[in-house]
Image 1 (cartoon, rainbow, N blue to C red):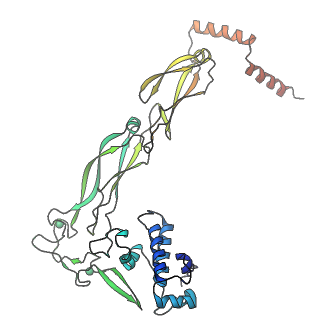
Image 2 (cartoon, rainbow, N blue to C red):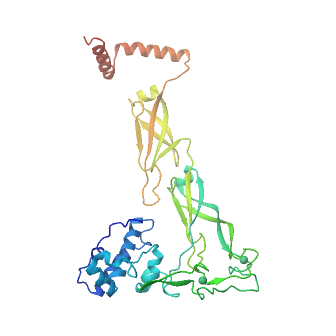
Image 3 (cartoon, protein in one colour):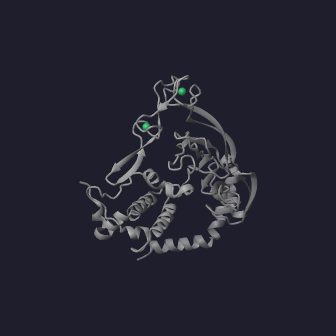
Length: 376
Ligand SMILES: [Zn+2]
Ligand SMILES: [Zn+2]
């Protein structure tokens, strides 16, 4: 037997007193249902649990007989034959049971009222961009698969010249009423799976499904600044709704290829530039690459190996906000591997000078080295 999780007091769940009127209970439930509504909390499992908990509390407290049994015996009073507290397995069960009291608030209003029309499923596609395309934004064509109405039967699923017939099990309602004791609930018809129809003579093209998988090509405008895993939505290009509701969306998932010069770090770009010892020592004007083409960077005399220079606002744009990251130029002092004679002579001369003129850092280093060797 499954163990029951510990239940909260229904009055606490709805945040009302034990003396609350029916109107107060309805009002409180309506407020909670709006707050935890799945459409407002997509992907939030805790909101779904809270939504179900509130519905269960409301189901009991809005029912005079159940409420009085609950007041006298607590949760135990609702268990056993005929008196079971409702188990809402699915959020749609809650809409089925209480959809009426919300009217247009819960969307899908009009069109038969009670039944919530589900939108079609979302689909995905992938798109690879280079760094410049990601930085500037670009229009691209993407291809993806999704179902479309069958052209032969116009989506009915029935062979041309024939028609789908009303489901005899549910009388075309798509839903049946299931009673458990005093509590009854509408559920999706198990025979027609909610369509309300049966097809005796299926269309050959779509084998009665009414839809065919198609590859579609769409143009998509990518905003500037996207990064790996950014999702760009193409509204209304997903799967059609089986219940005649709005279609889903297509989400295009971006990958950005690595650039040979720029390494991306969020909105910042890092570029490694080699400089010579003399440039580092004397200072220099360097030609550096930027997203907008070559630019000039002045490094001061005495530039150290690994030093970073910031070019503010020359990085990647932020696709959500205004503003750009920075371009960070990191310099690396290169030691030449091949030297001509003149070069060698100059360096030997330099070495001789360095024997006499030791820089403060070197002095302290040699001092520490001496201390290390003569510690005793
Ligand atoms: Zn067809
Ligand atoms: Zn049916």
